[in-house]
Length: 286
Image (cartoon, rainbow, N blue to C red; front, side, top):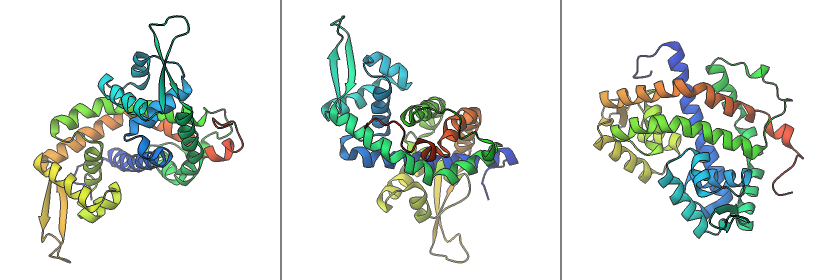
């Protein structure tokens, strides 16, 4: 049972948040497999996809297009320049203007990512369908034959919707002492009910050491508490639950999600059946 007092609509939204978090983590894993150690953050692939869709943008246009803080984009761009995935060129007319382009290695990484996306979307279709049902949309009425964006343009749409949501939620969780993405993911998982650390590890795809570090950080911020002996069936078991501060922060996150849920769902829904209609279609690799 959720530790928050929720009406039916908010309870469905909370479940949707957790499912979308799973989708987001899966998408990050696809990105990681495509680039390996060449990129170290989710924004790296977002930046590469943006340059594939909009080649030749300037650094300032890139910041505007990604809707992320300039410092965040600058760090990601520096990583990708150093890794040889992106290059700067001078504008053909205005030599003072810098243009950003993918290198052959960058294009190969994005092509690998693109090729993996159809499989990921197909494997995640049940999850997207559940989110649609929870948020009041009928997945069976989705027009899968309608024209839809290029698969990488779709990723860019999801990134834009996610960035708009993050811009509003980040100040809330940062002020509460949970600035990391995994921090706010953990709070929403625990908003559903208490959990054992091993369950959190599985849900958040963390190692035991990573889970311990997460819980230490959230405990220090006063957001969660660990309690031993709370289970009648296993007195040695440790459970994790939200504190009053954690519940307030989780509720604030949920309220932000409710304001952005339609935009997030609009970006997510077209992934249903994407592999079926995109098979054999044009690809960056072609």
